[in-house]
Image (cartoon, rainbow, N blue to C red; front, top):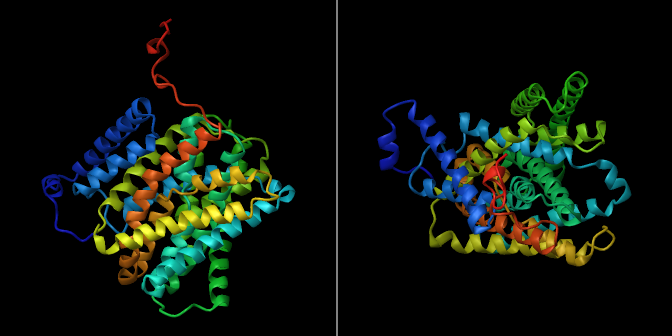
Length: 422
């Protein structure tokens, strides 16, 4: 699918081993600048700027990462996802579900209906069973990275924000567990027995839970002797997240799932509000920008054609409707109104890095099936990443949980309107 002739750009840049590093350095700088300008002047999320830069360079033939993802490109994507999911997990208190178990019911219903609706719609279009099954799993996962980045930029807080983050975290957990287990049977044209699927999923979840527990235990031990906000703690956290994530694949687990479960377990040990080190926030921001650029760059290099356009549109629409209907139908008794449940469904539209990672893994597991999956999944990822970020912003504004960012918010205090340098 992405096996194209070397572009003029790639041919020109191939003369030195140092030039790929230069490409990425300049690309990240441009993405950060465009993201800043997009928010400051156009009042749209920064990640739209990041993704737009990645998409443009991808269409121009930028080949800074090979497809399917491997080596350093795969590691950086997994590390970026791991950091985001670790933070998401650290914001998910399991004690909350004891007092409000209907949230778990709502989450399970949302994920199940999304899978069934996507599967039925794509099967009706005549796609093969293995392709439909993989695409349906990918459709389950919303994007914690997009949601949490927009929430962070807008400093949003409230019931819709909290519910959207919780549901996004949970459906990502389901998609990663089932999707990673599915890699072993992607070539099978028949339906995999339910027991075999459950055993495979339980194996992935069990290994990831053990490594997540190891991560939480090591971080707990480190935090007994280190200041949670110090620079050294930042380095230890990133190193341990990366190390435990690297151990996942060899043992049959999922690297992002390890970080997610590690964050959830750490939250249970330290129930107080999570203190995110400022230095880790800076490092996470760099990884986030790189992640969005990489995702959109890869997605933009797909074979865009009218032959798959109908399947792309159907999957986007059916997925959005399934999430909306399920959340509204199960909203009673979950602690928020039906209207707010409708707003939450809008915040679940974006797909991004987790979906790209699963797509890449399917291609590695089976090039024939995976390529067909990627032909549809990559355009869906790019479209929902861009439109979804704008929709999440609109949802947070309309629900009153975020204020419009000030045009001069990122300027030094002495350069802001009405301010004096002192």
